[in-house]
Image (cartoon, rainbow, N blue to C red; front, side, top):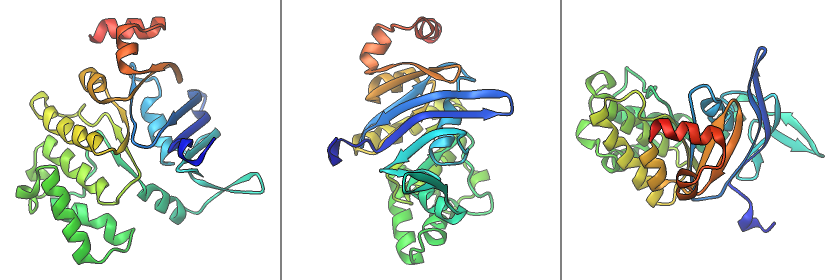
Length: 257
């Protein structure tokens, strides 16, 4: 396999349990640079847990996850994996942006301060440069007019767009979205999806857990259906949505379409 063919994300036989509950039962997934992959399926299928494993917010029990050729949360030495220190994990995470359902903004900082925080504290970027980047990103997500507002003064959709700008400020190689519109009122969903469409058009590699079938059909390069901790079906959205092969996928789509 040549260097250009190596996936940006490679998950190999990923297992994760919480106590006796096995949530991930051997996930294998490759995501190429520039691809948009949507993880679909019923709640409880392991989608969000898998997403959290991709940036080591959850430590996997078995298997390996590589991002940009490096094992997440570990280093390899003479064929063996060794867990790395939390500071090194933080630097890895800085390259993997994550947008949550519930925004997770700092409540005591303005929108602009939320976006500036990571680059200054983690990447050690000078405040002037961090501010210039934050202004540009807030403009991009349509939030510059609210730059001096605190999260409590913003709608859910506005908070989510600030959260996206905050992740982009770290200049990530990969963006993870965990049901980014599920906590929003229906009329606010469109603004957030519009920002995500823009990122996809610019070539950002994205893995998105979503129930927004229309977004997945329109934007995703690959649709992945997860049920009970396994990938039941994956392929081009046009193929998977029009002609699902797995019975569970057929049942799921019959309910949501």
